[in-house]
Image (cartoon, rainbow, N blue to C red):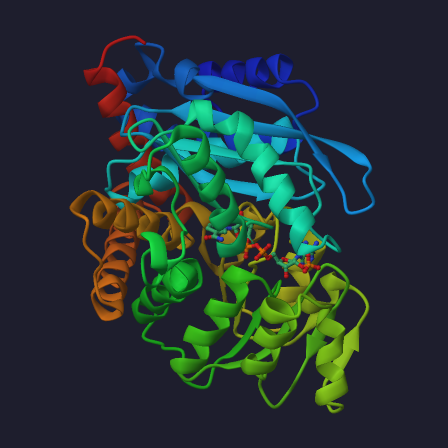
Length: 447
Ligand code: NDP
């Protein structure tokens, strides 16, 4: 970064948010890639737009007390960041994971503002969650935790205020419990207050598949630009949760050979192509460890290290697990093993150095804000259906999702071309989303 005011702003963000490394990383990535815009349009450096964009409108921090199956009182921390409402009600998922702390919630909320802007839908940016660890908890404990969490969150959300959804550790089961408690406390069946609901009570078809499918639709565009497609490509996918499973499903449907995936304990490699029905049974139904895959397919190999995934030979890598998975070592290993396309299903899985390495080496890179926006876009479609009191068919939602992903790719690509770095989709998506967000903020005055 060469621009003095950007350097000063980044320093200010670091000193005002000490030790929040993930948040610093997210801000640095955006500021860095906006530099070419400010060279030709310095007006964006005025009106305190940048100073305001890096500061959340509100950060809510609360206690969540609940009772476990043994009768012991447990206390967790709950968070909701309402980052930016210029484009619409705050919108973004809830994450239940022991690593959740303000830095994680703020980086996710900051990224969400730009991601939502790219979808073209009227959604502001927010994010939330808790350091609660759902692993090993009984169904009753999950329900009591969700109820306790909502007993505070409900006063801060609403279909025109803030609309949470799922993220890591929060799927349809948790959204159901959260929604039930919201309804009980508010005495309102306000379906538009949460997305990711079951289709029985206002959920949208395709929402479960949306982030994974959307990621693959985005990569289809990347491949097409290089005169390639998924047929016969070797693909690796990190994680084996919601995003990973449906990325694997769509990539397989398009003819890819998906050879490896992982969980937080380890990696499985199956040269015959992954058995997705088995992975769904292990992870979605039984909620067990991915290692069990090898009991059914003894030819598959298990490595007790999630990072071993990035040593597997592949054409396309889809990191879909969590932040910080790809450091420079994993980026180098991917490149050495033939990988030429990387697209982020997870939020911020690649370090800044890893991203720069991909850009320098000509590995075509799809950043999270653009590539994984399919989940929130379909949440936006769920909100529309709730307002209309209608439910669209699977094919209709899927087609809209596909259209939105094509349009996000086109925006990122065309912007990258305009700013003379045609394969830099990081810059392209950051500039395109920043302009939409900043224009809305300018038009609404200093708030
Ligand atoms: P899930 O909780 O459904 O799945 C997360 C998966 O990642 C699990 O398989 C988990 O394994 C695995 N995992 C966690 N840490 C690691 C690690 N260090 N190494 C390897 N695997 C790991 O979450 P989602 O699929 O919903 O979310 C995944 C990512 O996608 C997150 O970054 C999220 O923010 C992002 N995202 C999600 C969206 C959504 O719609 N769900 C939308 C946009 C982005 P284990 O079972 O061992 O915990």
